[in-house]
Amino acid sequence: MSLKKKKTSLPVRGSAFAVPLEDGRYTVCRVLTNARNDLERSSIDSVLVTCSQWVGSEVPDSNDPELIPMLHLTHGSWKNKPVLIWIEKKIPADFISIGMIEPTEKEKTFESPSHAEWIFIQFQALRQWRWDHDREALQAEDVEKKSEEGRQRAQEVKARNKYLKTITLAQLLDHQFFPQWKQYPPRKAITASRIIMNETIVELIELGDSATQADRMQCLQNCIESFNLIDKKMEFIETVEREHICSEFEAIVHACGLGHHKNLADEWRDW
Image (cartoon, rainbow, N blue to C red):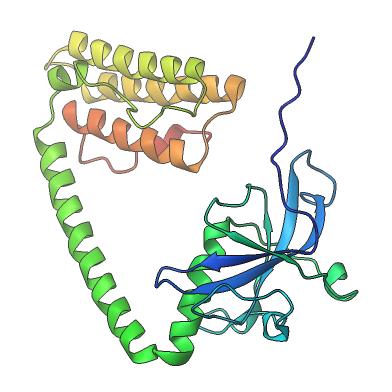
């Protein structure tokens, strides 16, 4: 007997919630439509949600007419875009039900190509309020945040370059590849991926220091082509997995003395 995946419990059309913001205040979100994700093409339930322009210090009454106008985003590059997003996750525990605000007939017809999570509403509502009422401080914080991110990136690049210059094949032999992979990819894919990396290192060590560049290059190519094969069977390599594989592979490239070749994986990968 096959077991069906339990569906996420989502709020019904018209449900309204007070949404806590980072500064202790609230905005309100409303469910406009219950539908299947991607216009019935998916088995995943979702709801179309909008956010109110209203921001206040206390949980509001659902009869307050100020909760109805929809929030439009004008900060950054949003260009007056309304907050209309499909959400597939259940309501967060800290969202407070305030009852029902039935959408208008027009609101029931709204569509959107955008998918997000509930935190999107919390972030955008507060940021838009600050853009409208506290813009100078917000922009100053953004400048400082970008500067700090720049400093962190520079430190990470420096540490990465030092790692690549000093890493050896012997050290990689004891390295656990893809420690970030836990819930995904599937266990079989994780195991197969680690075997490929370990076998590549063993082969390079067996080739020895006197191996030709062509022999080492062939070993590296075999590594990437092995990933092509297992991805064709298991279809698990997405953007994040690709970045992880390329990062780990780059360490092997440097450890075998071919670090002057940049982005070697791109020459052979299909993913």
